Image 1 (cartoon, rainbow, N blue to C red):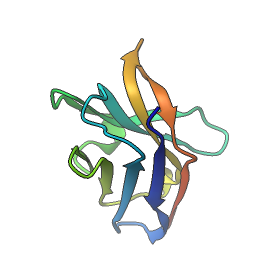
Image 2 (cartoon, one colour):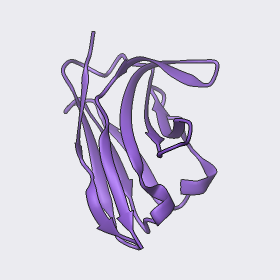
Image 3 (tube, one colour):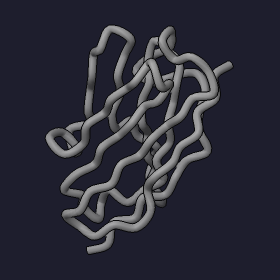
Image 4 (cartoon, rainbow, N blue to C red):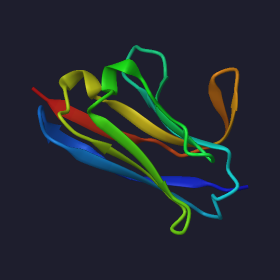
Length: 119
């Protein structure tokens, strides 16, 4: 089973940018769906962005126009470029690799990485 490991994140000022990267331990070319989730304190985990094998991309409304998801099958990576960050983007972000089931990605999860946006 392919395992994802996240990197990037940290502390950034509002209006700034940050890039998250998810490196998979194996070949991701056959993985049907990949995505980034986030969970803020006291809130439910939510799917921020996703990309499928055929290139279909979806974003949560709150990040449209600010976040960009991309996958590189040759490097076995999934990235999330986050621009114009807001304090409400503060959360633990996790990479998920697998397939969609009832609107959620089922499969392997990373440990999560903290992104903190200061006002």
